[in-house]
Length: 403
Image 1: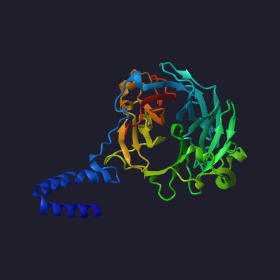
Image 2 (image 1 turned 90 degrees about the vertical axis):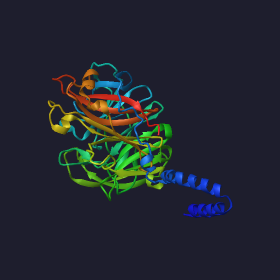
Image 3 (image 1 turned 120 degrees about the vertical axis):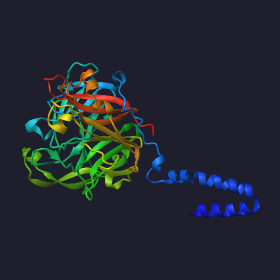
Image 4 (image 1 turned 90 degrees about the horizontal axis):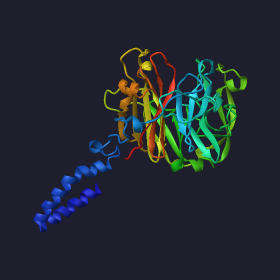
């Protein structure tokens, strides 16, 4: 309002002294008023803002986009996500099979660029009574590797573990089994929050934790800290309540108990950012939304991943249906930087068959990672042949946002 009032007084003076200049000023101000309001728009610039994807996921070139494929892990089940190692290895987190729903497998594997099946089931650590491991992070400290994962979760009626109360930091030791109460360190973000999923952006010294909003379940919430600050935060004892399976060695137990956990207290830190947006409604009107399949943070962008395989959508391999996969890019204010965009090749059964990952079109989105300037998307494929419907893991390489 102040700017507009000053402009009004200036224009009146010009009108009385220099009529021609007055007319020129009017034309300039009115022709630019829409642009200035667009720049100031808290929602990101209004309709004129370009939010088209720059990640390249609408196109596909096997020579550049296939990163690793057809990797079989410890169990015949989907991976939940993946991380990269500076030595070129891939770290997969995988839900265990059948009666071991309380277990997450951490598998270190080489990259598989060919179409043949790679068996990766020897360089393994088992984690028990943690959460679902929808999102995890690997931290490198010299020659040691640490997995960051939601911990102190609770069993549901089906025996699966959800509702993590803290983040655990676990040193990788090949061949060992670690329970949720046996981590090197724990990280605490508050008593009201659960379902915690970490992400680490080492290039920019950032630790992000996704959590459930206790006041409104329609939102996805994230808090970003400096990783270096988080690792130096003060220690404190906190009380967390979860099921007692890790203590009684009964994975199916739904009996709850309070436990005291010695944690790094992140509530004492000032976050870099808090990001919040609705779980649905960020796409065009009438859009169909699919299962959330992970996120990652790189620099000041948050990459959000969703999708489902045709098999999970319709319950059969033998239809003409296609799998669905989408990526949306947000900034740290929760604004859309790059619109919800379909990963086109995942819905193209001919491409999937030609690159040797599935004859049945079954591609379940499982993990997203922005790493060293590239964007990687993970999928569990089924139907490597018409008869073989086991779970094979695949990773594809695209671009981080340029916006």
